Length: 305
Image (cartoon, rainbow, N blue to C red; front, side, top):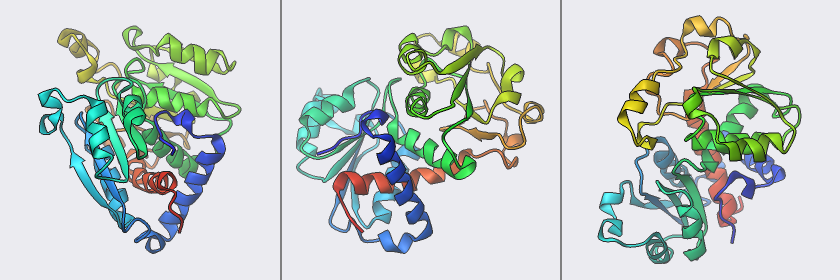
């Protein structure tokens, strides 16, 4: 039985296969409408989510399956002190596959150790978010047509941003990648991520506190919000939350074929005036999430068309 806890659980070849299946789902949706008719997805979301939870549910429903679960820890027995291990051991008897989000790093790994069915990490604290990374990769595949020889700018909260950590892990396996790390000093990329996935692989990178200074170099700009829920100090959050705001003026300095990605939700780090720019891909990116999650569910359930 295979789980997806970290994007590195999938080989480059497996990612290519998932993207191929997702492309076929987009082209031939009717072919996949009943492949999971007798399957149930359990969504265990101990932390709020809109896109990830709903795209998992939409993915399973579009495959013909059913969904059960909860969208708030307060509506689960964790409020009574039940452990993640016990919750998952019980839910394993009710469903065929689990998608789980949890505020504590490592919780999905614990879940996988106590589950008799596949577990998908739908985000664990500031750690990893592998299905968002698959979404990002499918978007890059559609919008840029390649994974090699790209200059990727990551902007905003690089310290707590689990989507950033997972994307760096994934893209570090392709050739000709250069990372541009844009953040305030307080929200720099953690040293363990930089060491393991950039320095150890001799990948070129630069760090900057200015988006304007580097935006012209980028093929991809990955914007992130400064996450209030990751801060212990409200004062620090308020001081840093508006560090970077992408607007039309900054977009004028970018390449004509640069694309803007964002895992969403957006607060105010991308001005709404950018939404009409053809380089703004974040809403298309959210829609791609459903198709890659459909492909992933099929893979982990070993469902064939």
